[in-house]
Length: 147
Image (tube, rainbow, N blue to C red; front, side, top):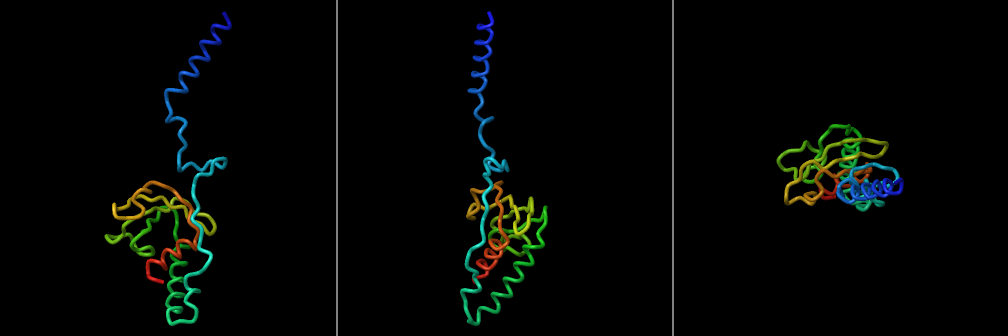
C-alpha cells in the first residue's frame, strides 16, 4: 500500500513539472549571483579624445568629455535618459530610445530601456536591463557628437 501511495505521489509530481514550462524559464532581468544574466557594458580601452592627439579637435573633445562625465555622474534612480539621438539632453522628440536609471553603483549605472522607436538599434531591447560603466556612457555621448 505504501508503494502505491509513493508511486502515485511521484506520478503527480512529475505530471505537475511537465505542464508549466514558464515556471522554469529564467528571467533575463534576474540578478541571481549564481546565474548572473545582467550584461555589463564596459568602457572602451582607448579614449576617443586621446585619438585626436594635438589637433584642433582635441580641446572641444576634452570639454565634451568633461560635460558627459558630469552628466553621467549626476544620474540617479528614476532619471530618464536618451540612449540614441541625444544622450546628455532631456529626452525629447529626437530621442529614438529612452531608458530609465533603475540602480547605481560606483562607476556604474543600471539602465532599463523603456521605449524605442522601430528605426532605433534598441528596438528589440525594450524592458532589458544592463549595467553601463561611466566611461561607456561618456563614449556614447562623444560618439553622438561626432568625436
